[in-house]
Length: 617
Figure: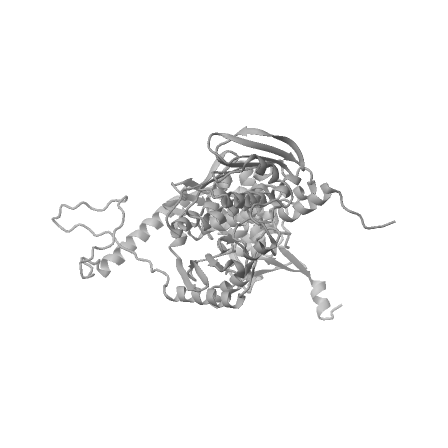
């Protein structure tokens, strides 16, 4: 009896679908590619339930006839290829003829399309490769594809999806990847009936990049442009002073197709070697144009990887172009100007707090008139410092300080002293018995041995437990900012802000939309030292989007990110008082022995252990 068997059609289709449909973002990618190939100028995407409940893509392209609608969901049905020779010069996004068939194998697929004006179209509905409906339906010229109940018959694949927040981020990144490459196309995206993205057609690539990445990012980008026939490269890359913690702001295209191409990636890495710190990444958007016959796009089921014929030539061109672009422009310097006081006897009004600071007026020959004197500048700085110091002293007097964030010693009152008294009794109180090693570990002599504390992991645990209780009590402790800070976000960061704004407020951040992609920061948690003028918020957005933090809920993952990013860092010098307070607070939390990531915070060495090292028994 043979042991080799032919798989049933439904099993074979589900296995094939697993290669193409990895997650909801995979569905979005395949459907957008079909819409772009159809020549649409307007593209709308709608999702529900992070794409698992619904993915809908509507285009105004050429549409399909009745016969085409019925053929499109079948295996290896395509309008892009006619013979094997066409594989040598693929010029469209889709060509394999398996996307719709693979999607229909693991979902309920509904296609409605029309190739003519007048509202007459055709609709077919397939669930798990079984046709549920096939008949006429009203539809303007173009196509609407709805994918519902994704992975309903493959629960194993559904179980391995990430959090809803991550899946939504993947969908948005996919859409933005296409939007960056096609500035002439109008894109709309909404999730759970809430608008997320509205990009109008623009005339230049720079405008579309600014709309997606943010104008503040584009200020740090330099243009990269090379035309070396038959290769053509254009794009933008960031100056060395502007880097990110990951590759989320790196987009690479080959003949308009967004790809992960190792040759281009290695060329970018080599271009910034010894220029930027380790584990930092530049923002890069590069589009490579090569002859269609010099690139193989059929080496990966999802077409995310391609193979270039002239890899060495491409590597050299990308590296040379980036280095030339960086050498031609340096980071713009910060210009600080001061309001000019009114001259004696002048009717000009004095500047108010609301007045916009202006640069000194320049003559036709570039000379600056009425340049502020050195004495005036120093006096202005001194008055500003005094005003800020007075304001902050008032803030501290009005509000309770947050020792779990600052580790600053202060009088907390009898209740706080009684709360930490048990922890204090664990340690001998002589200052000489607390010391810091390598600005990373705290050594404490205790009765019967020695305790070693990892200062970052310990402070992370303190902030995590305290912040979690603060969220549950819904009593934020915040300090206002004298001059509110405006942050311009990318579209993906703005989406993350909308999803997390309420939790941020419970932590003590006061954030509000400020038009466009900007937000205004009016306050942050008291005692927070590693604020870094708002960059902490961007780091938290990034952690959440990439599921870097542990936790059983979205709020726990956010608190874990906040704790990790705001805790004292390895290499940070602490005073004896700060070391004492950290130890006291650590032993006051519920679980002092590990950080939220599971790393140990404390290690104890007994006198017996130390004696064993030196053969004392």
